[in-house]
Image 1: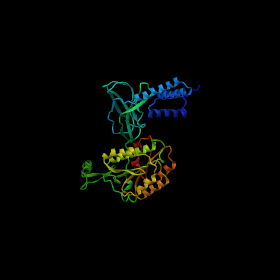
Image 2: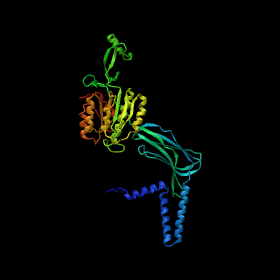
Image 3: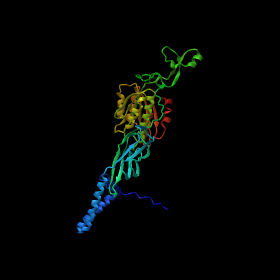
Image 4: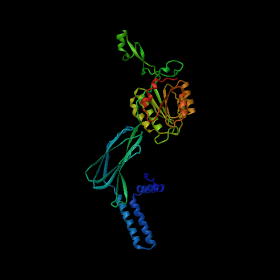
Length: 422
């Protein structure tokens, strides 16, 4: 036995509904008002052609009623609304709670309060209010959850009302919109940019500057004048009878450049693009991590440099604000790699985040590695990833981190410190 399925609306029906909605938005006529207008026009024309004066008078009467309804519907309502204070910045996928308060100086009936929301924030809030009594506040709480990063407007808040006959409808703004910046998702990552692979010639970058403290324990040595007393290992004093200080692995640099491939042709389709959102999340997670560790962080996309030498945890918010606003561009990764060649400050650790590596991009990366550039490639994989991209990444002889939408970044980056150049 088959089950009847709802038939999809035809193209003509959809276009008719769109035309009626546009007419209501521009002129204020509801479907009932449009029907009355059509009936009035038909009666007037028929009364003129027959001729039948009675039909024409009925048609004119409908027109007068419609005009009267439109005039009554143009009045401004004495309604005031306030929205509770919204957070200026919020991470993606965190629920935002809001409360609106509506008051009126006159008795109003049958109004609808609507809070317009961007599609990425959720469905717009609509509240039907049967009666507004003067001096009595109407409160309503609602919540929405931003799904992706970006800069969105919450509002405007509108009141929708109609005339007593229901032939016209009008919307009046009662609260202006507020801007909310939604930051990308930040996950804990362990991008170990210090590695002993750089200690011995000839592969140590000739222009690198060591990060003096490091993060990984390497060993102990005798204390010499000028060493930081905080690095003294007091247990060693009891065991060996002399002062010894803790040594960390030698670092490469205290400068980190994050290069985000923003080529729209390379990323997976969709608005928003899944691979682009993951790439932005990787850049945000690495940037926050390095700022916390005291590094200087710069951020580039294919077209331009967005942040230069951000340092300190206080730059976390400005960096996330920038990443909330970046969008795909129609510029290839090659342009970004060319800027790496002419960067006057070569003593930096570079992280390239991309979903695709072309033959020309792979050639440029190999040249950068041959001249001693510190480079890590974060490859964003998806179902559309070309097999040659993975093959070219494997032939670069540098750390390549493969991330996939839906997989936690922390587990992927956990193995970075253990990997070495083969």
